[in-house]
Image (cartoon, rainbow, N blue to C red; front, side, top):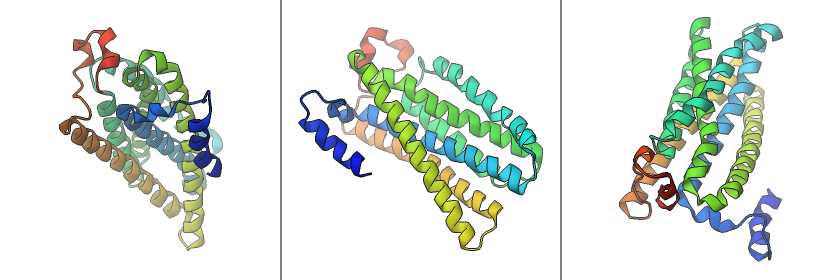
Length: 240
């Protein structure tokens, strides 16, 4: 955390900074990065908690748990191509916010079901929403920055997603440990932590869309036309 705090100070003074911090004055980039980070936190936490829950609480063997994970893994794989098809037609922030809503509701559903068919369905839906959220961050990055900064922006987004995902996972593990020490059963601790993550996903989606609308109304961001209606060469110059 100290290094993260010192890093921007150093970058401002460096003659050839690793990251040009003016990148973060791009509000659409900030919103996309924030949603991508939340999606990655939620993905890491969901996978971690479900792997514990299905084996220590629901009694699956490691092999059975691995088979169960094929459902979300399949939809995560499909989220990439689906995201690529959505990209020309919808705002990046809209797609990612809707993905956050889907995954947040799926996580809440996951904590409230007992039947296996419902559990697998909810888990698979989590995989789709979360996969679409963090994979679309890479697609969206290329739209919300100038082409000559696309490589830099992509690297920054990947670093932020991985770093924040690790911090979020550590926070979730700490929360589970605190709950179990407070007397909660393992299953209850997993469910409470997953619900907190679900509310984070839902809240982030709502906040980002509200912020974006406020910025548009104040003229700080331009409304984004559907990409299909805009020549590719003009996309970099539009407020997104």
